[in-house]
Amino acid sequence: MNRMQTFKWLPGATLLVFILAAVQVNAGEGSAAAFRQELVAAALQRTTQQVRYDGAYQKIAYPNGDVAPDIGVCTDVVIRSYRALGIDLQQRVHEDMVADFAAYPSRRIWGMTRTDTNIDHRRVPNLQAFFQRNGQTLAVSDNPADYQPGDLVTWMLPGNLPHIGVVSDRYAPGSKTPLIVHNIGAGPVLEDMLFRYRITGHYQYQPQRSGE
Image 1 (spheres, helix red, strand yellow):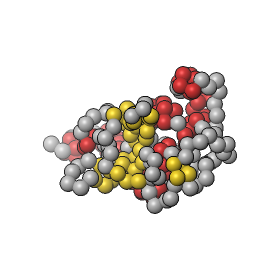
Image 2 (spheres, one colour):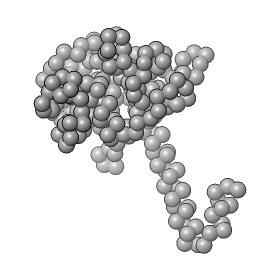
Image 3 (cartoon, one colour):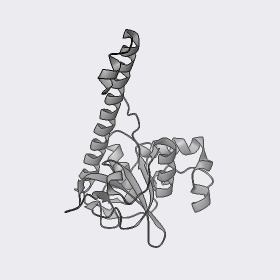
Image 4 (tube, helix red, strand yellow):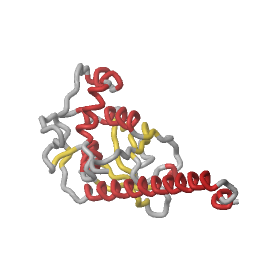
């Protein structure tokens, strides 16, 4: 029995509530999928940019601050992709860290005692904490079907170097493994590397945008 067959046995008012709820669920799912596709498109656009890998500390503006467009690291791929959608991770991470600094690893890893809008959002462990607190934490698995376009994945590279990238809607030739947009040293690229390193996190982050 399908959903509408079930509905027709309900009293009128109850039926209306169920129909409206179903419409809202479908609209929400459609909105989420549309957002993820926008994020994928923004990430793929990053791969057309010439960017030299440079993670040196720099003072930048706040909010909407950024290092020079021709330099960047893995986190800048994510930051710039979200910013293209009107979402400033610099500001959002900072505000969340101000609200609960102890929830972030800045003291433990870098010995920091307060927030720093120049660098906090450009550090993978901080983004992981932010997405855990404000987005959805998804399962880490070896099944490529579990990784959907627009998902965010973190890895630990050799030498204990944290890394982050965006899952695309494109696939490795002859497989069902999604390609990843990331910058591991040669600038933003689209690459088959999802299972190349140990995955440490898997997230979705779809915040409300200004005007929505």
